[in-house]
Length: 300
Image (cartoon, rainbow, N blue to C red; front, side, top):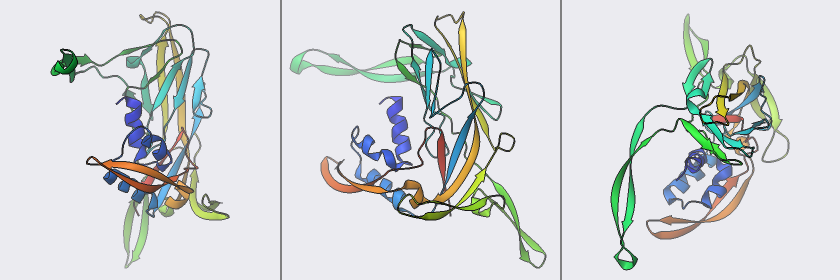
């Protein structure tokens, strides 16, 4: 299974809007299916995180491109994922140097390439017809520092990072008798600087209550950059760069129901221990989904 499918399966555990697409490609175990249904149907709060593109190479509708290359982001997932794909727009072969391409979080460098080797097992066939047999062989694979990208071809980032998993707010509350309790939380309900607002309902008419907090480039709790080095010759004698920078621009905390949005019942067939079972599940439209946004499920 390739990296893109692994990522989609991971996001599926947190994002109900893509269940239908995943089902077209894999057979779900019934136990996993039950877990997905429970996730969407449970109560609670979810904090949506929106980002803003800043800097010299802007990202618009999750995409940044120039005459050579197109970078498409998909951060959607629990706490955010620095996932992106690259597309060679030209008629010439392109090379990506992952050692000189990095994820920079609050000015700290995080590498996309680590020099290491892994041992993999694969099957080798021998014989013909009914007499064919298979034997295990071992192969040592070295991590790819430079990726060759043919003309008009996509490649994906070899390593991803969690973007943002903490927004701790310290609150001191008096409990009487000259005692105080200190509460550390990332729930906007407990944040005195957050604003209680009404936002449009995604499941019906009218509005629903929510909490919001907006940030500027000087007040943002996190800023991160994606720096990429590429060239049209393998020795990188004439290298080029593309750099995308983001800030956390807004948090919106809402109910799980409003976050997932409207549901549609879909018939599916699941295979469990060799037997098939049919069921109906709810597929949610995820109205807040964006390639440059992500979310966190809050513990109540």
